[in-house]
Image (tube, rainbow, N blue to C red; front, side, top):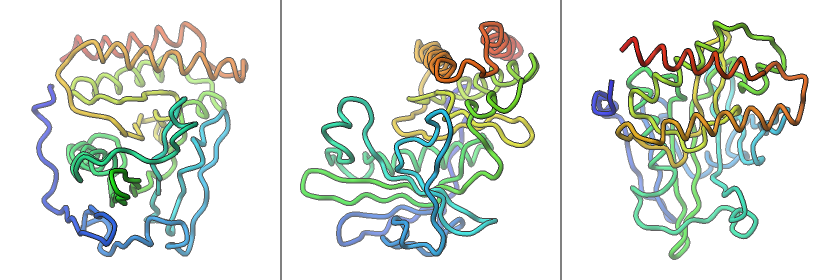
Length: 253
């Protein structure tokens, strides 16, 4: 399966101009949207996403709305050294090239093709001269936990690690590039199925070295959190099991 087999998303996307930018949303998921919805105060219920082993991110992600249809609101912030200087602004080069619109459309395509990613609800950008800030609202996937937390709370067997590898291969075979595939963005649901979150800077690509690079990034992430808590249930044999699941999936195509 290659990137070209992913069909187009549903024709329910709407773009509405605002006084300071634009909002993109799926009317079948969220039928009324405004700038206020991209702030915690725009919802009756809002709680900051927190997590152990640094899985809470940068404090820029919140659960909003009420169960059962709860949403995740994320404000785009820079990481790394650049993030220490420029917190959350990006250079504007057109609405379609904003971080939020690009991630929304990628998620829309993946979710429409039954891949295990959050369904996007709404995205916006706010332009300030040559710069902009961005936000994204997705539908919360109930019962998922980061892989980092899962292996802290459980001692998964060989079949689990192989299933993680096979799931990653499913994304790679579809040409899905994740720019930051780590032990936090890979999440496990109550049926032990693998989901992927946070597709900022993600893309659909032809097969290439990026596939090995993203696997290596995940390996480094797992080794890093093992350093935070040596009691985590992850050993070198588990990584070999994950790779075995990945390559077995590739051979069975």
